[in-house]
Image 1 (cartoon, rainbow, N blue to C red):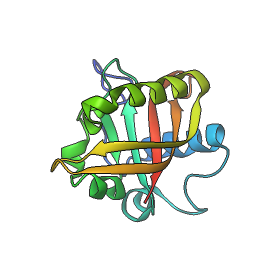
Image 2: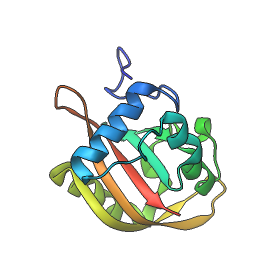
Image 3: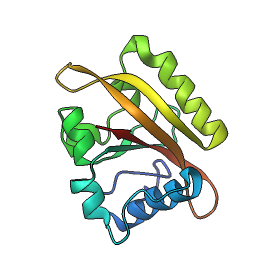
Length: 153
């Protein structure tokens, strides 16, 4: 998960067990319920989850480090098309202030529930993400290394 000279959270692949643990542990701790059903693994989260899941690194201009298939479908993209992309590019310029307020609230409070925002896919199509829960990703040393967002439909 760590690049020697890069961000504390770097893209590793959709089935990385360390990233899976970071996502699920943080969701349980900060949101208060499990992200995945009992017995589900990284493959389920990536391939079969009925919700979108994105994560970006804690950087000044964060890049996506995770996008499950549901999120890829909504953004009309692929793993390689989303992961590594600046997360701000998923929101139109006129939606940046709203996005920035969400990120600031999560940074301050650890979690935010109930967000709704307009996003833009790789093909230029606009869509809404609804019922978004976003939380900080915290490593074993207690450092915030990124943020993750789960969204409905």
